[in-house]
Image: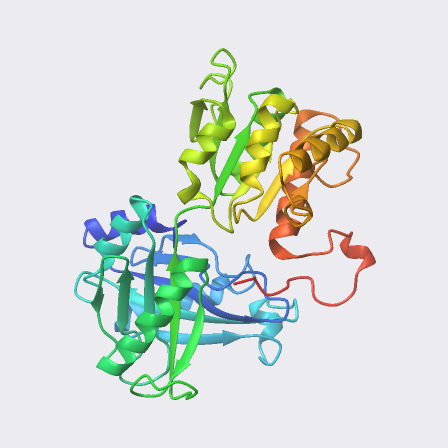
Length: 370
């Protein structure tokens, strides 16, 4: 949704009808995760993707039909389909897609959702995906309130509770309920899509390696902040891709933004200078950041560990530190090093083996971690 939002906002403002196709469920080796979206305008323009190219043509046709009829549809594509090869989903996976029409009359809360995304505020959209009279009904959940409804007060309350919890971890998935919101029932399926602000990457140390890490971080979808105490090096000219460039002592800056650090956050400490990185890591290792990496040689790493232990950092806390940072790719240049760091961040985030796929067996695409 975040990727297609700039386009659909223009269509919405112009009064043009359009449809949004959203992945609501995946099984086995489906290429995209729940929440991936493709939008199709009444004029035939398509943006976004729901399968990396496998089923886009069929979804496009369904979207055109949904725009014409005004009725949402749920489609399932996978290895059980007789026309699997005609459609193109030959990867062995299964994907379920909700295709729904959007116009001011059908989705009055669209502007609320768009405004929240623009402002970097979390918002969840819960949509009934069970065929029937309530298919396509929506409940929009924001930290400051809710709007819309799913057709039953009890169902609204149950979904609201789940949506708030899912917003906390940024997950999107289908949840099952009874007709009035009863748990352990399956009469009603509701897809809850969490639209959360981009994850944060904090890069400490205004060096050439940091510039490369900032570029890769932006490419991966992070909101990137570069911080260094040296004003002559921490400049917008040197870090044009970063969202923010801050001149401050790293540990002091991190202490002031702890509310922005969560399990999706990556902290990249590239200063390899004890006066900067020891107080910074002492604080960082006590946050719940998903990735904490520090650059330096083996000798620098062992010296750093000794200093951190002397500062009172526990062994459990030290075990969270990836140092030297990055995967062993034989990287030498700043760009190669940035790729190795990014690869380790992805592997840590997904709990993957970080081995060549040619040496592994089983599924390529594992379920996303909630």
